[in-house]
Length: 412
Image (tube, rainbow, N blue to C red):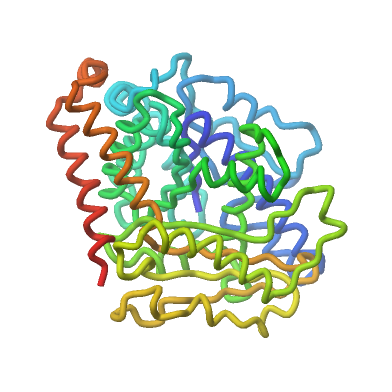
């Protein structure tokens, strides 16, 4: 699995993700029978002294990329400096500038790095992109580079992980950038995993007891959740990415993925916390489905399919029937729930559910309404036009997003 980290947010999330993957994988591989799995994995390759992340680091400013490259001495893994591409100017929170200006400048160097890294993989499973949709680099350049991946490897699957901005507003043009990104990725990627800053902020405050969560707190939480879905299981000894593509990303009209995990416990409370599987899955179900059903009441079925990951002790005896409730899925979908387990003493209990669902639809509708209002008043449109994007491009992107909303709302 080749990861492409794009923009400040994408590189920060990626750095934390590889930390978490390496830490958890090492924790679960303490006996000699798992040496081969430890040395080489879907996300790492091994040289004589350390693990090297299978990743490309892309940004229009050098600071975050250089920080990722200069990891502390003694770290068990690192990035390859030759896989880092950056320039000295940002994208000005402008999707069009990232796509039409920086994309063209970066394409040749990106293609070369992509080809080199892909050739070093014995069996390339696909691509994982990490990006934000609020600013200009993650959204615009990220969309352009995803198109470049499709052009070079048309038969390989792509999972785009996008970080959705706070609904209260991070950037004045974030509604434009978010919709342009979703419209673009919906035509390119096999799956779009949307992770919301609002949800992560609430978990940090309510469960991790961080009264004022920092960006680093959010990044660590999101990376931990991602890792919980990507770590190998008993049934998948390389990574679960094949299961994600094969089970969740099977219909071109439905590509939106939603992820929840449990438990989340404050560091100073871990020594005093105990969980039962019944209680843990009840909490996870409430977290993942209750809000979805309430907000998506106009959709007959909230989900198309789900993967449930159980890691820890006694996973084979866990009752998962609530996640297999047929009311959650369309009647035509056979075996919509698949459960993957990893029985290990290194982890007490951890559960993750990843679904193809309409969870984002209410937020997407709200973003569409705000973007239409801005576009109707021609707000900031001239900034996008200066970078080479016309009004027809806007309107086409809006239509693509409306089609996504319609597809999920009419899911039978």
